[in-house]
Image (tube, rainbow, N blue to C red; front, side, top):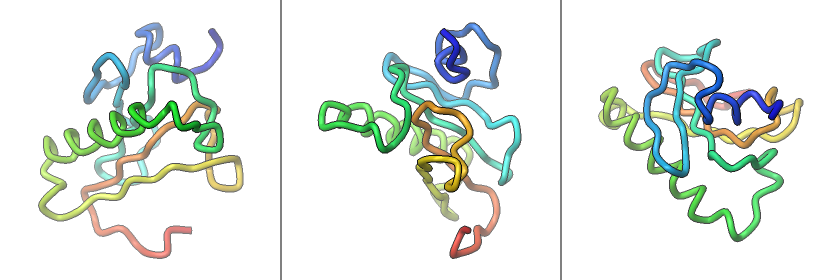
Length: 113
């Protein structure tokens, strides 16, 4: 298994885990772009948001639920947080495994890019 995020989800590579269950793993980004920057990944290898199929509906719901849980744990539900899915290098996707960014802890600018 060569996918970095699959290896983190499997516990083969250490990470600062914020939450995990049987469908997803949420861990702190090693290059945070905000005071709270957590990545939520499915345990199933899905290359990107462009690879999502109807059968992934429960996985996407689990990813959002995990992000909501982490946001509540850090108190971000009071002031706000951003959830981001990127596809491809122009959007900033650097690991070919679907991941949801949870960004919080400061005022985020708009537009983002």
